[in-house]
Amino acid sequence: MLSALLDLHPGSMQQLDLESVKEYVGFDDESARLLRELHPLAEPHYERIVDDFYDAIQRHPDAHQAITGGDAQIQRLKRTLVRWLESVLLGPHDAEYVASHARIGRVHVRIALPQEFMFTAMNRIRSALTRIVIESYREDHETCAHTIEALGQILDLELALMLDTYREDLVERMRSHERLATIGQLAASVGHELRNPLGIIESSLYLLRNRVSDAAATDPKVEKHLSRISTQVRVCNSTITQLLELARSRPPTRAWRNLKQLVDIAIEYAPLGPEARVELSIPDDFEVLVDADQLRQVLINLFHNAVQSRTDVTIRVSVREVPGGHEIDVADDGPGIPSDISSRVFDALFTTRAKGTGLGLSLCRRILEAHRGEIQLVPSATGSIFRLWLPDHETQKPPPSDS
Image 1: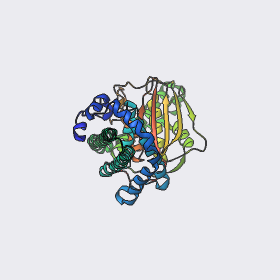
Image 2: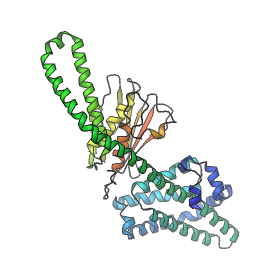
Image 3: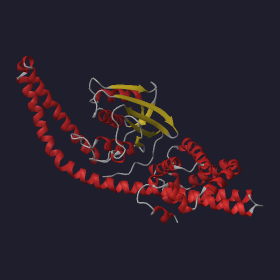
Image 4: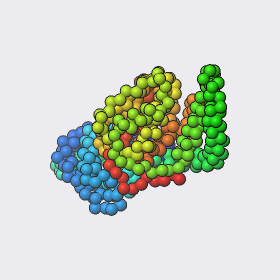
């Protein structure tokens, strides 16, 4: 059943026609009604179900190693699981439901929870809810049977959705490995060859400035062209650096850092220009668990991306606490990103700009993934919104290397 459901469409579950999937598993309005009626009967048992769920995880060392934030993380996850149970039974089982539950699946992928434990964990919940149905409808065999069937349908859909997030991750990793292998070969062969002539140009420019300093002072065109050479050398060096950073895997050295200070330094180093404005909505004492240099690079890349199409752009940076971590939004009022290419903006070497390299956003994603976080382009009516999610706890397992 599950494999057939996943074979319905080669893309993500979020891209499927949800109604056709419901029809395939037999989930209809009557199924949804039966689950809503089950909710008040099951709600008093949620705490027991959740405690059993995480007791089983803590007893198994292979499953427990995915929970790296200690008891505080488990308590947050328990609250999330209660909300998930409520959502499964209450719905509405619409496109927004699929999107939010797919994100839960991606959390499983991000913390490297083995698929077999996701299956067995789902089975514990299925068994617990089924027992509640049997006890609640002991005298009504027909309602009992139909409710168990509806429960099976929605949990089968949940399993298919969770499995699809693992498939998504596998496909993306394969694509990423292929891209990065190509980039690595390019960076290794070309990087060294370009660094040498660029170094010669840079040192020659320094000597030339000293020799023609008087001419530059009296002739603005001389200084203008010298500055152009210097700027383009920096651009070339930056491109080579990003290529090398993208090709190699450097695990982050994380510590609690003041976010506002990191953003201020990123603003100082980003090529924003005098017409751009950056507005901050960040508490002075707000801290995030990051590698300071790597997050600064992410912010610089996002700021640079914002001014590519318009120099007088306003960038707004805001932060908020969310379950399990922090969300940082970097929004701008520029022309935005067309929806037909939004799914490719983080691909290495993908760009729509004549002078773009297609490296900045892909490097952002690589850094966030190394932090066990994520970055996404949030749909917006105007401008662009990039949302960063960073966990607020240490991970004991290092991120998998792509090198």
